[in-house]
Length: 271
Image (cartoon, rainbow, N blue to C red; front, side, top):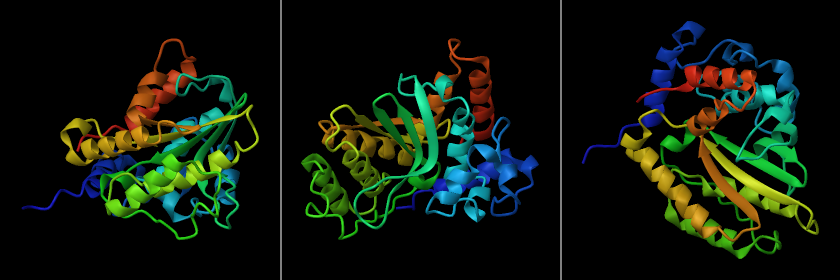
């Protein structure tokens, strides 16, 4: 049996070819973070947030054409200044946006949301993926995450945690999503006036339906949705192409529609 194609590497190659005008090196890195931004996105919209995060994103990682952090910044950066124009999950009325938003779990290590959004009575946390999910890998299931340490965590999420732990390598990083859930759910304790949504937002190539890795990845997402359907934290998913298509709607401001077109031009690939 032949080995499955490495779609992450194929996407990196296609991205370098697609963005050849940016003068990236042989590994797909540009010289400065500014070179990795699309029109309308500025360092002022995200630099302070990323420097406060735990991932040192603004060093070399952000300069990769395939950077998941750069993808999130390019998508949501302009909404830092205009959160009222953001439409997401059929929701409007956002009042605040932060990149690399830290969540409290009571443990020393704090999970960082790629994007944290606030609106009246609700937090929406986004976990953004670019190419990471195009290959299987083993999640990081640390021993410190236990019912004794996190007594508020719902049973359905512990079941998802243990199911993923025994599954071996998968396309969907359930461990990472669970850690974000731990933080979002902790913030709801004693707050019946608050709600929370965890959005898994992922990139796909234009021919995703013909790529087995993408098909299996979506299957794993649906399985997790079913497993945590009764959770107090709503778990949703959406692909970036779906999001950009929504932002092209005629009912949205002209700048949002233009922004969506710039994102599609930058990131649409066929593998």
